[in-house]
Amino acid sequence: SEEAQGAVRRMAQQGLKDRLAEINMSQDEHTTYENFLNPIRDDIANLKATLLNVEFKSIERDWIKRQLDGELDDSRIVEGIAGEKHVYKRRGKREPSNFSTKGRVRFVVDCSGSMYRFNGYDERMTRSLQAVALVMESFADSEIEYSIVAHSGDSTRIELAVGDNIPSNAKERLRLLQNMVAHTQYCQSGDNTLGAIKRAIADADDGDLVIAVSDANLARYGIHPSELARAIEGPTKTFCIFIASFGSEAKAIQEELPVGRAFICMEASELPAIVRNILTMEMD
Image (cartoon, rainbow, N blue to C red):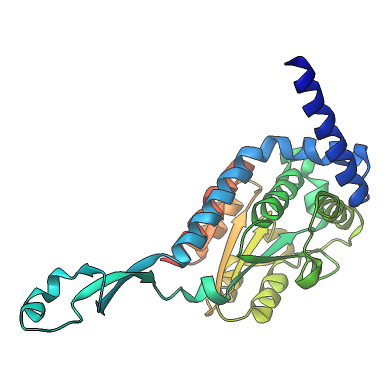
């Protein structure tokens, strides 16, 4: 009935009001963040499903053989006829992969001045913000740990979401995005992509993945793709996602890097598939 629907709406509105008060988020801030998420909601759902599938694969049940009970193991019928009792098999958890038990995903994002300066040209900053929002929202309910650091002309490591400072609600996620924009507006000219990736690799633990999101603006600062290739060839699995490019620069860099370690993503909607490919590749 209309009366029941009205009651439900009032309950929902009150629930939202209470939640915003709990996290000290204004209605305007909530509206801003919701409007920002609207174009990528389907992408968030897709990446959440991917992460859930990765987690499921990490605890996938396998056949444990030589059991006293369960389903008869066809490969041990002869032993059973001979009197052997351990001729059954049953489902059990297989040993998880190194990544699923210990690994974290470390995202390295570009907050250099070029991101802000050229956003009007190709919306690279918008895509970077959407990529980070996508990660924060998708990983929020996942058992897979993540961290986000940035780099700019001022620093090779700007901690955005690290350790105990992972955003836990919409207000904190909005603040993180606002911090990214502020860094791009007020940092000095320069590019620390290479140094930031090297530092993230040095900080990584066994089983971690490093995923760098960059605008591929390397040539302007005298960084040759071969330098980046050498940096990511070590034991820590490192991947680069280029979300912008002047001409064919991103393609040229991709061709210099090890096969399967570099991706070109000019639409935010492509990012979930790229991250899915990286994670599932590491789980196989």
